[in-house]
Image 1 (cartoon, rainbow, N blue to C red):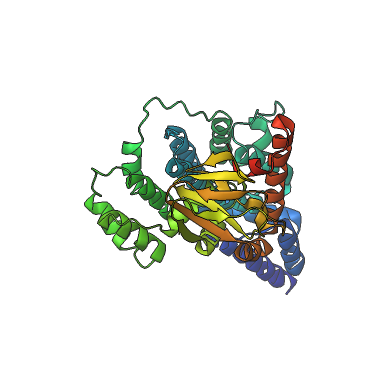
Image 2: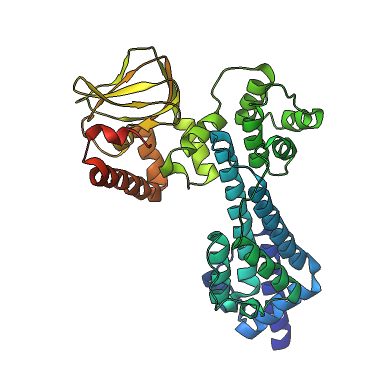
Length: 385
């Protein structure tokens, strides 16, 4: 009876681990320990079970190797893109980075279950891969991950070496061919971000295969709006455009794609005629403005102290504080802006509290730079140049 019970416990535990690996569910060490306790599974038996799963079922091994290959392809892709400093290419690179981090998360979720007794070594590996281009610790070599299956350790080590030497040495100063290829990328966010850049190639028409693919995705309103804009040459701002404009603001550069999408849905478009005051000195601020097109003057009193244009932004301090505006901003020409209100932003940071800390750091850094370099000018906070 004991023998039968032990087999049942072992088989039940094995099935739960196998199902979790199959579904790529997260299994942290605390949860695994609780499962071991529930089914009376020792560390040795756990290792035997995961070894069996890895060696007897090639699917788990192939899942790990497939993820490593996908991560490698994303590194190769990023290195192949010419950084022309446009918003579109910056956003595309950000989207590739986001996909890279998702795949990296999935990879180490699997590895942490299979090799749960080697957490320290796994943490070192993922830290290197997260912080690409870092100098490789001399203490880290292939022997550091020799507890893995040989095919996995070989592939992972090659990936780690590649990540520490990623360098953008692109000679061709045109991304047109890459963008055309990315329209068929299996990652929908990457393909859609490529579509944002493709709209600049006005003489180009979308290939039929790409049209069919995006037509099948038209249930997604954001993608549908972007496709309509490109197909019909509409002059409208889609949610993907809003994401791109928000990403251009330093404080939002590192938030996740999904979070940026939610934030973009809260942002509004406001337009102003020439010679119209957008904000007035002394008034209470409650909105961040990102300039999409046009130019504005920054005035302190009656004196113009700065001029802002495309890619500039102002009013970020208003998102966190209740202080009066320290300068007026007046349109020089017709101006189109993307705006984010304090209420919308507060709702967002309540759900993502780390963003508020990041914004505070950005504002303090800007104020310190302004004070140290040319004496504090209240208007200087309105420019990121």
